[in-house]
Length: 109
Image (cartoon, rainbow, N blue to C red):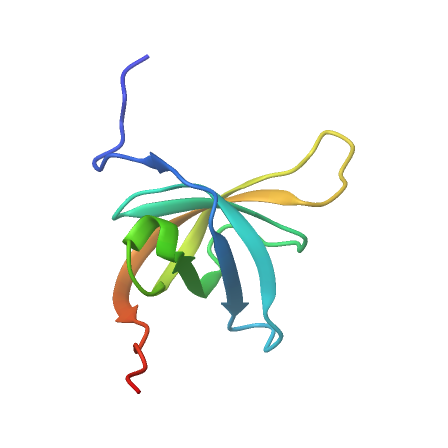
């Protein structure tokens, strides 16, 4: 089998907060891997392919070697992987269509 991905994926378990246009409440999950073009995360919520997403990833200080960095991204679900028994969490593969990097402000005394 040949690799079809266009961008290198990094195995990172990061906190992610997800919002959809259909539900104003946010859901929390964790990434499994991420690239500049896509993300795979698990979440305790049902989703369907084609859903538009607004999500924020947090890069902790251990990774950035400084203040936390937030990645605010917009995209859509391309694949949903349900457990065999139908229980949550579900795995979500999403394409990233746009993202912004937001650096945390460092306080000065």
